[in-house]
Length: 337
Image (cartoon, rainbow, N blue to C red; front, side, top):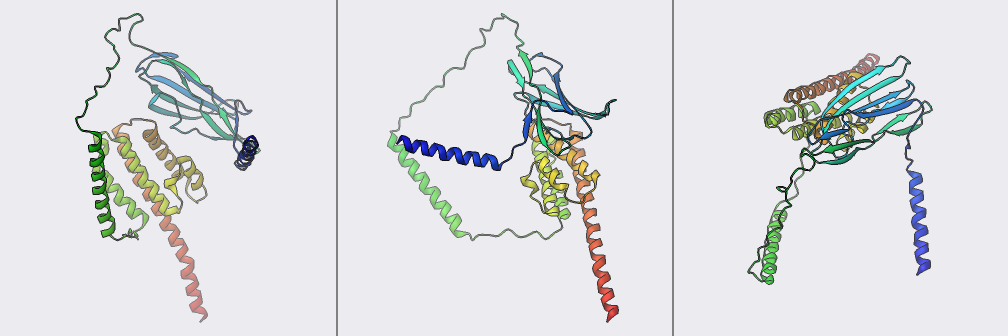
């Protein structure tokens, strides 16, 4: 038995090592030449509900290619109330400095740590690494004065249990009858209907997107304060539109993966920048609990319409360009005859 355990351990160790060698991980370092990360907060101690400004500054050489950290980065137990991108600044020594600010808050007391943020970058020799920022400690204090009387704050009482007068076998019979009814209903539904195939929509991608945007506009979700659902539906419309146009699985990609894939297509830099800003801000609302202004939500709807229109015009130009050589070849062939 002991020999069998040893053999299993060796087999697991072998396959685990082989799998680790197949997946080449990016090196993680705490310091690297040509790039530095600075993190800070304006309040090392704050009270419940106070806004804490968390700053993230990255300074790097011009020959270092930086991949900005995601807006929805893990910030521990803190909620993101606002986000500000201060852009890039070229320093006197020629290096580039980018800075971002997060407005954070929490409603529980204790000693917290804003966790490190990983920043991916590529050195001049095409080596990719990940630099880890320093964690930042923050202490959240209670609004109650030290030594205050907290006698009115008591634990929750235990739940009251109500005893039923029915014996256990009644529940078994009732459960069996319920399952039988559900089975009969499902059998009739699934057996009475033939498998229906979803019809293929032969319209142009921009026609489908324009109709979906019109339906979303009628819902007027920002007026009801449903910003997260609004941005989920808005970005899904744009992602499905781009998936139909460029034939790539945009719905299954993160924003960073999509921006990497879209670079393989011949699109204008202005459109690529517009897509990145639009999707990054939407991720902030969907994943970081950020609450935008209603004016910003309506402006992003117009931005989505502009993205659809820009891509539509670019695709129509490509179609016309491809049609011209075909027409020319047909004309030349007719002259030869």
